[in-house]
Length: 96
Image (cartoon, rainbow, N blue to C red; front, side, top):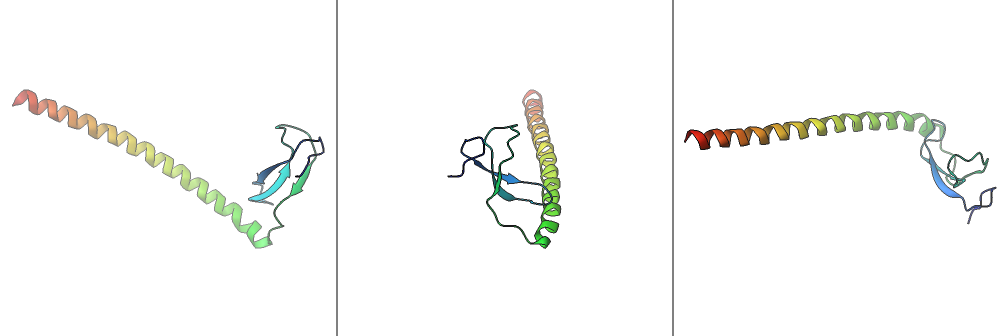
């Protein structure tokens, strides 16, 4: 077990900085702590990975934003279709 400098068991966190994208490390479990403890769990990445991964992460985030927008549109159109079916059924019922 890895222990933080403040005496608490360290927790595994993930770095999302451009220099260490996706690299796991041990850190202080206290959120917002000024504890300087840091111990890397994963080995250093090759320079090519460090160059490529941030761009890939940005693209994934952009695509996730597009997916969320499309899901909202789909939900809206689904409601419109249901409302139109109900109105059509009422029209047919009262004009039959």
